[in-house]
Length: 273
Image (cartoon, rainbow, N blue to C red; front, side):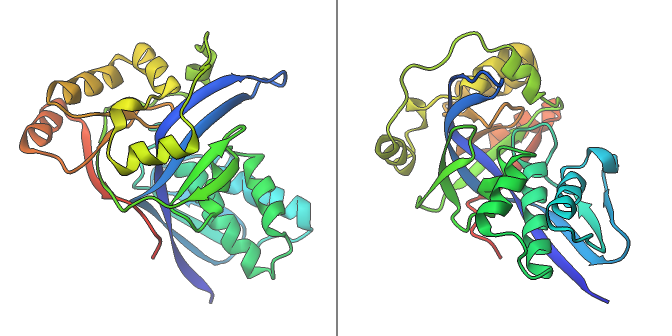
């Protein structure tokens, strides 16, 4: 019987600017994606089509299941596979876990059935379900994202270590976007963005969605203020709730997170297995 284990990494946004809103309701953004070593473990094996997780996400709501159904509709191939996802990436944290699962599984299934979809077609398919998903199809660990985040330019950044803190609240991307009233008129060039990150100058960066998330979810703002008080330069990832900074945690960060029952992860840049 065919059985394969895949690793589906998370991401952080090393800056995110919302530039405007299209007539169709989607928002135009400028962001820098970066893969991190916090991964979900996925087992694929032969069997009737089924998608399960250790966290009990309903199959009909799972992005992987939606992707497999769309893959079947587009190719005429019904994948005879059973998927089990051991989730380690927190949900509702702006870390792209569901999007990564979608891209990882669909890339493997497309290969398994002889590549019926081209690279561009596969990217379009997963992007129609999640704007972040096309990034996880790329080999590079970092990419500039434009448009809805799905127009990508792969870039090289130095390997970095990060401290990631996730409070006990799940942020709704839809709610955060709905609360936007103003858009960014200025944002760094690609060259400036790469220079800032390479030199660890995150204080020059911002996350429009993260600022809104802090207003809507006080727990996220508390994490941000706590880290700033300790002299760190934190940023919110995506629409939250995860907050991170470049570097390893000191004892004060570890004790503070434990006291407040925040999840703390020590992660680094991810380049695949």
